[in-house]
Each structure stands twice: as C-alpha cells, then as structure tokens.
Image 1: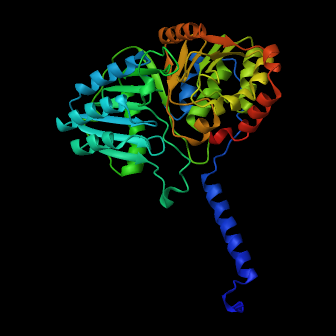
Image 2 (image 1 turned 90 degrees about the vertical axis):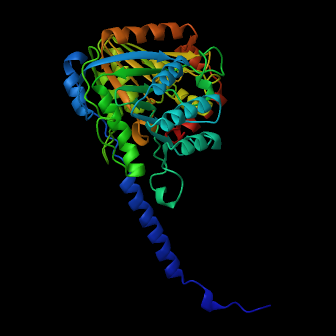
Image 3 (image 1 turned 45 degrees about the vertical axis):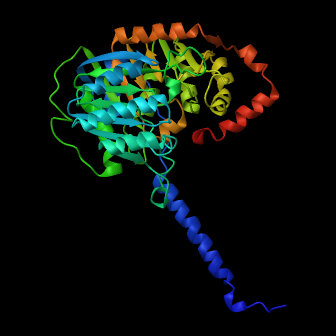
Length: 428
C-alpha cells in the first residue's frame, strides 16, 4: 500500500481561509444586489385624482397628457400588432419575456423579417431564460433579414451576479409613434379568444401620443445595457402631438438599493382608494404590508375584489398554491377573492374608484416588485376604468368566489403545500 504524501495535503488554516474568503465574497455580492424592502408609511384623506402629481413623482415619472389608449384583448392583440408592424416605415422595437417556438413565433418573426428587408431598423430584445425555447427557425429568420437581436442576461459567469433578474416587460414601439404594453407573450396559447384552457385570457393596450416616448425610453434601458447601442433621431423619437385626452404615466424604474416604482405605485394607489379596488392578476402574492393595506382599505369602506386563475387553470399551479397561503387572512379581513376557472387569466390590471387604472407586465408578487424589470402604466381616465370594470364583471361569470368558511375546510395536505411553497414564493 503506497504511503500518503503529506506534502500534497492542504493545511487546515489555508482551507479555513479559503472558506472565509468564499463566504466574504458571497456576502459582498449579496449586499451589492440586495434591495432594501422598507415598510412604507402613508396616510392620506386626499382622493387619488388630486394626488396624481405625488403618485407620479414618487414613482420617478410624470403625468403625460394628450394620449389615446385602446384596450386589446386575447388573440385580437396580435391582429392589431401585426397590422401596425406591416406598415412600419422607420423602426420597430420589440421586447418580450416569453417567446416559444410555434405558429405565433413564426408569424411575428416573418413580419419583423419582412420589414427589416424593406429597410426598417428592427431591434428585438428577449429575456434569455424566457426565450430559451424560441427555436432556431425564428432566430434564423431574424438574423438572415438583418434584424438586431439581443438576449437579456444570458447564462454564464459574467452574468452570475444578476442572472436572477429577468426582463419581464412586454412592449413594442413602432416608428416611435405607436406603442403596445401589456401581458401578451409570444406563445401559441395567447392566440384565440380564451375559449378553453389552451387559449389564455389577457389584456394589453395600444398607445398613441407623447407617452410613446416614455415607452421608447423603457425599451432603450435594457437594450443599451445589453448591447451598448444608443439609438438616435426622429426615426425613434419623432415629434409627437396630442392624440387624445388621456393622461398617462409610466412606472418602471428600480433605483439601486431601493424599492421599485411598480411596487410603490401599487401600494400607494391602494392607500388612496375610497370606494372600490378591482385587481386582476395571474400571480397574486402580496407581501405582509400589501395584505395590511388591502385590509385597511376594507376597513375604510372600500369594496376590494381580487381575481386570479384557479390552480387547475393556471400555467403555474405551484404559484397559486403559494398565493393560497394568505387567502384565509385576506378573506377574514373582507377582501373578496374570485378564482377564474376557464383558462389562465394573465392580465395585470387594477382599477381604483372608477377613475384610475393600471395595465402592465407586473405581477402582484415579490418577484415582480423586487427582482424583475417591469413596466406598469397608470391611466387617469374614467372611460378606460369603466371598460376595465366591465371586463372584470364579465370575467367574474367564469369564476368561483371563495368564502372564509369554505376556505377553512380545505385539506391539511392543501394547507401544507400552500405554506411550503409560500416560503420560496419570490423564486417561483
């Protein structure tokens, strides 16, 4: 039996030093990436319309007047989007989180490729994780046509410190004059009219007017950090006149080490509500403060209603189970909860007091509020809010409303699964 060569052994003190260095480096990386999660303190008796300059200021934006906003539902979104893409003359900026190979991906990539060959500057930004199943055919079409393509935060050592931050935004800007923002992804499930579980329910909005510049700026944020390219001139930032009477503001910024604009926005408008709050969101997991704010709204006499997909209808049942962990508390405080049964309800919509509404990419959870890059638009327009309230009422026909009594009777296994998954909800 050969003798052990002590000269090759690593001294214990050196192993200890290496462990300390690794732990210290991990702590430094964590501290650099860690965002403060303050408990907001807000108190106001002023109605939301009178506080809009405050709301926009605290969310690092401004109220932009002179816009039109058209709500587009389900697969009709792509009919309208593709029609606008096909008449683009100068530039198309396309940003999405989820793109999977299929019919829709083929239609989108062919339309973008055709415009690029016609001389239109086409830039496409897809989250690396969300686009991993995009397929080689779509990429080949875009590349061969000369489209500029970039993947946000691809895997690798260079991205290890920020890999968990995803680009969850879904937006398109055409010629710097028309913009789309909402929840639609480039997956075949978003085609159709939400007629069954294979065809999802979603809402986006088509914009014209000066607010398009703010959406263009949002696209530039992650395009610049990914590619280094700054795009200039009238082809991307043309002069924009009034296209309507809707004031809109954009919440998107996440200051380093501070709370994101979308989180502040969602919490702040809940505090301002005086009559009713309607929320439609596929992944509704408010943090403890969010639960308290909704409960306080009920105590003020506000009618608070929340709609999410059922576990059976959701594309991510584990997220719904995590959300279930706090449903009992919300129901006990008087929040009314509806579970949509028909298919995945994917729209991220909120209305306040019938006068203000929000549409965007942000889920009502810690991942969207604390980690992902998101965009939420705030609209001060009673007509738009009324339409979204009508949509809520229509969708409620396909829901089961939960009650405290029925919820208390769910099985022990259901409760255990809810609690276990809630512990890791931020990473789901």
